[in-house]
Length: 134
Image 1 (tube, rainbow, N blue to C red):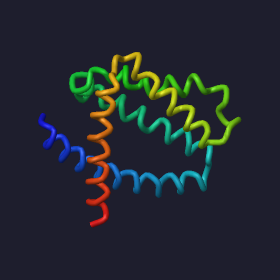
Image 2 (tube, one colour):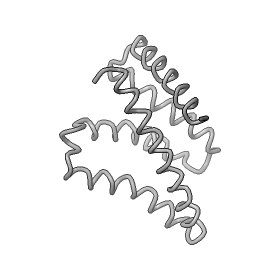
Image 3 (tube, rainbow, N blue to C red):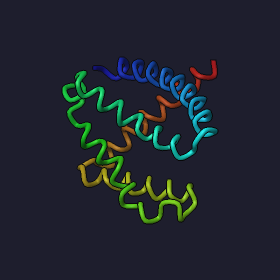
């Protein structure tokens, strides 16, 4: 898929994801009023259940590296589990981000590859923001 087609598709998915997120936040607020703990458990189970349901619908063939992706997302969380709830959320997020990003060197991602991705992402982000402003 060429870059322009990928960018258009990404914009479409970003718009639909925002709509989904807006609906989820309303549901989240409703759940939190009833039971904060159960709201968190349900919110965490939702993407896991989604992935489990997609496995029988072509996920392994479409994206064979999903287990690797999940490992990259979860490894920083596991490494930080001892400070969970003991440090401010913003500090936790900064530590998570640093651990997450440090994984890329291990995967052979070069500084040039990072730079190219950053340029693409910033350009696409600016385009999405201008589309959302309309």
